[in-house]
Amino acid sequence: MSEPVIPGAPAGVRLRPHLGDLAVYAPGASSGVPEGVPIVKLSSNEGAEGPTPAALAALAAEAPELNRYPDSGALHAALAAAHGLTADMVAASPGADMSIAYLASAFLGPGDDVVFAWPAFVSYALTAQKQQANAIMVPLKDDTHDLDAMLAAITPETSMVYVCNPNNPTGTYVTRDQLRAFVDALPEHVVCVVDEAYAGYVLEDDFPNAIEEYVKAGHPRVAVLRSFSKIYGLAGLRIGWLAAPAWIIDASIRVRGPFDVSSMATAAAIASLGDHAEIERRGQENAVRRESLRAKLAAVGVATTGVANFLTVTVEDGQATTAALMQRGVIVRPLNGFGSPNQVRITIGSDADMAQTEPILVDVLSR
Ligand SMILES: Cc1ncc(COP(=O)(O)O)c(C=O)c1O
Image (cartoon, rainbow, N blue to C red; front, side):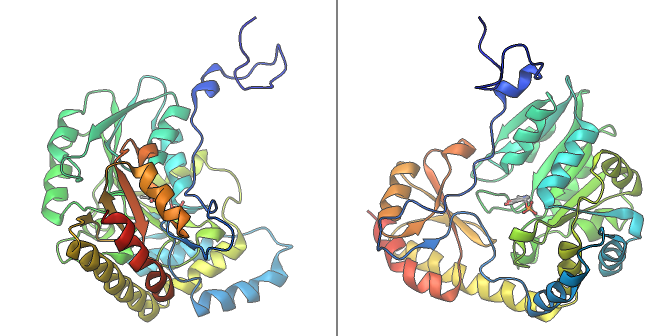
C-alpha cells in the first residue's frame, strides 16, 4: 500500500499529492534554554520595542467595536496618503508574508519560474512550492544579491523575481543604482517584487525607496512589500502591505480571503503611521545598538554583515554555535534552514537585551 500524502490521513481521501513534499515554515526558536538561566530571544528579527503609544491607545479604543467586521478602507487611504499613491495602489494583508502568498497565487502555477537570491526570505521558496512553480534560487555572492546572475536566470517562463532589500538573513542591501540597473534590464513579462520589510531600519544614503522610485513614479511592473512587524512592533497582530500598480493590487485582491485584515490591526497600523518621530527614534537607536555589537565583535576578529535590526556572522558550525549560546540564555537563529549551515543571525534587541547578551555573544563567537 502506498504511503499517505500526510501522515495519519485515512486511506482513500483525496489530498493533493504535492502536499506531502511541502516544507512547513520553521519560526526562530523561543525556548531551549536551561532552567534558571535568564533568556533573551534574538532569533526572529522582531522589533526591540512593542507597539507605539498611539497604537496601544488605538487598540484600546477599537476593542469594544469587535462585533463589527473590519473595513480596511481607512488604512488604505492612510497608506496611500503617506506615500503619495492612490488608494487602488495599496493592499493591506495579515503580514507581508500573506502578501507574498497572494502574489504567488496570482502569478505562479505549475511550469512558471520565480527567481530569487538564496539564502533569502524562506517564504519565497515555500509559496512557490505550494503553487507547484519552479523556485530558481540564485546563490548570493559575498552575502549579497548577485543581480547579474539573477538576470541570467530569467527565462520566458519567469513570472516574478524577488529582491529582498535588505536581505534576510544576511542583512546586506542592493543600492539605488544597482536596483535601477536591474529593473531596467528586466524583460517585460517579469514582475519585480522588492521586499522592504526592514526598510525602516536602514539609514544608508544609497538605500533605495522602491515605493517612491518605482511605484509612485508609475513603473508598471514593480511591487513593494512593507511590514508593520518590525520597527512598528506589531508582529503579533499580523499586518503588512503591498504597494504596486493598480493592476497588481487588483490581482492580489482577487486571490485573498474576505476580511483578511482584522480591525485591531487596521486601527493600530493607522495610529502607528502618524508617529514619525517615534519611528525615527527607533531607527536611530537600533543603529547605535547594532554598531556597538558590530564593533565589539570586530574587536575580537568576528566579521558581521547587516544594515537592519540584525547582524549575521559566519562561524564553523551554526547549529553548534546556536547551542552554545542557548546554554547561556541567548537564543539566535542558525541559518541551516536557509541553506547556510555556517552562519548565525542575531537580532538586535533592546538596550537591556544587548547589555545582557553582548558579553556572552563576544565570548562564544570569538572562540
Ligand atoms: C524579508 C522579510 N519579508 C517579509 C517578512 C514577513 O513579515 P510579516 O511579519 O509582515 O509577515 C519577513 C519576516 O521576518 C521578512 O524577513
